[in-house]
Image 1 (cartoon, rainbow, N blue to C red):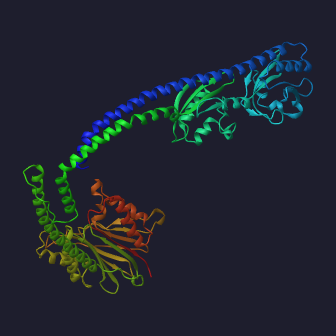
Image 2 (image 1 turned 60 degrees about the vertical axis):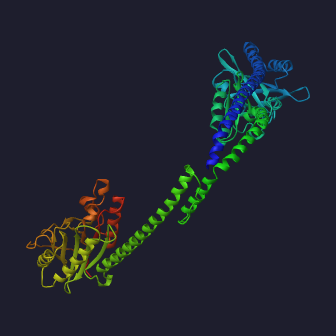
Image 3 (image 1 turned 90 degrees about the vertical axis):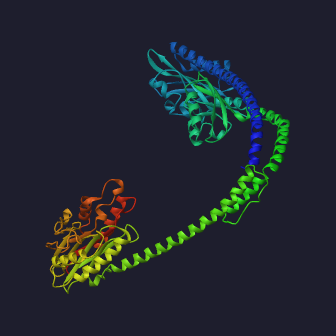
Length: 633
């Protein structure tokens, strides 16, 4: 945002805020009034229509209940007398579509006679026992047998007789405490639907549901008798509609805003119960329809004040442009400087105001920045040269490590090794070479420190060790010579831990000397069901390159077929220092026992993966390992 924009905002914002507050207040007052009027109208409309439905249902309830009481009192409970009563009631109550008398068998077959209007002003008689032989299992009959109480059924399509959607009121006939049958009255739900579709609710519509939530009336005829208000709410992802449905089937009255589809517009639903049948009637109107007139009035209110506000803001914009032109020049120069044009400068302005002082300071800053960037470029070039030298040093150091011998040359053993530096170069190293035709020398060493000094010392130690090794010397003698020669050098306090072993390929005999190094592990393969046994090859002498006259001992082990020898540095057991818990010897031992029968390459890969997952943030120290397994060729 420019200063010109800020001036425009400082003056225009209060005007816009006052104008907006006026519009918001006007909208709020009119909206509240419109919603209240609409709510009152819809409430009265729904309550009136619900009351009309309830009067019809209550009248049918009273007719059938009274007739059932009279029938129960007849001493001669005969079919002709009942038929006459049905014809008389249908003639007197034109809102009833049909009536039925159905009775339990009294030594014979069950009987049921049904009278309904034929559409021409007359009555049609149907023997239900013939049309529907299993009428005693119908929803309008069966509940009365198990619990002789009057009830209204859910709306249903009367196939085979009325061929219409209707709702039935059933009253049981009980004589002497025994259930004899039922009397029913049918109201046409189709007629109610037609009435509701022509009920004036603006652009809205009416909704009628049964006690279970089944939709009886809806503008979308595909929903009628096929969906409930709850299944419709679920399909439309409308929890508000689901909540309203629960209140409606509970017989409550109310009015509230809801979303009848998940992210659709807000509608107002006003609902009231039809208590005689357990139905509930609702009117649904979009809130936008109620507030449409408010929006039209607000549009008229915005024209004249809006034009005046636009003239004021244009005047402010023109005046601010003349004031802020020097600042714009400074912004252009700053953009050019940010894109790398270190020669850019701003024109000097007369005077000693804030803008003039800022321009002079910008020019001085640009000159200083150019000098600073030149210095940084020189430093970056030096850093890249150093990184290149470290990369070359790593390549040289890697070349000092012996390549893994081909599988066909590994007679009497299988061997694999890995070396990962914590920095660009490492102080750890491994080595292996043939002392004579039968014996293989194995070396695992860890030089104190990290980085380039440790790498250089590692190269010296490796070369010295190879010079000292000889076929006629034992590992003990080689270690003492190696220690003495390194101790005589000025190593600035550096030292090395080292494990040296001679492995006899034919016999599996391992003769070793451990100069303060992490004890290697010998995993026996004599109990494969239990993962084998594990032994540690502890130190036989002190650190190398510290005490010139130090003496060392040596020890022997014999590797059987399948036994695994694992050499490593402390970068493995001390991994995870950042999480205040080390990987440790116990985890390594458990891991090696589980890998007792795996190939040596898989042993190294699995150990490296486990340590890497444990450390999480990378290795704090160099990681080196060597695995050898005896095999008879």
